[in-house]
Length: 131
Image (cartoon, rainbow, N blue to C red; front, side, top):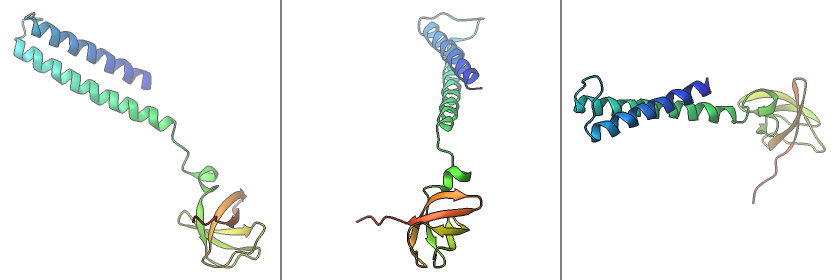
């Protein structure tokens, strides 16, 4: 799909450029008036710009970080909604999860960070406080 968008944008730019160049030196195609030819060329260049922008957005989407599932939750910050000694409940990305504290007791209201996911349970640690 992206290759087709790039090809279409390239073809439109070439046609628009040829029409503008030929209109500037007075050559007309198929008996079209120079003003109409110039407007057609500008329209083609605008459409080429839109197609190129769609192409750019599509390519950028290919390189974005995954924002769902296990990949999104590991490393995310949340809040302990109950004491974790060692198990309890946390809220991460707007969802409530059963969690196990790694290496330390975590108190209710303390900020946590997800370390890993074991089935439907999270393994968390206290979040590092920034100074």
